[in-house]
Length: 85
Image (cartoon, rainbow, N blue to C red; front, side, top):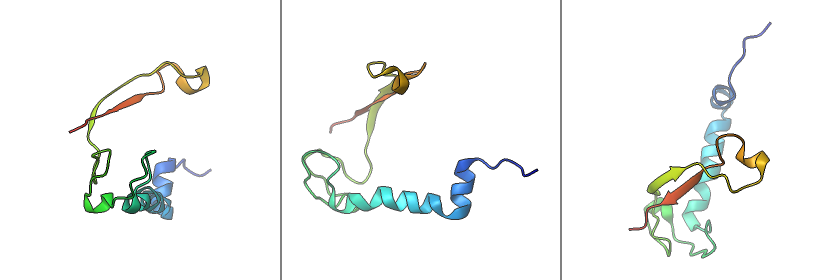
């Protein structure tokens, strides 16, 4: 019987974690993540209309219960508040 290996450990061992990180970072070089699609290079800390550079700064987070029950579960789906500077 094989020992259980958590998914995050297996992802690192197989290189999938590094690939997932790269897939998350690639769109930041010509940012179209928000509806304004300003195409700034956030990897160089350029700031577009949203004023977010390389690293987003969060003002807070809390449980959110306004979604469908399968998404909310018992603890809420979660909401992030972006800090605008």
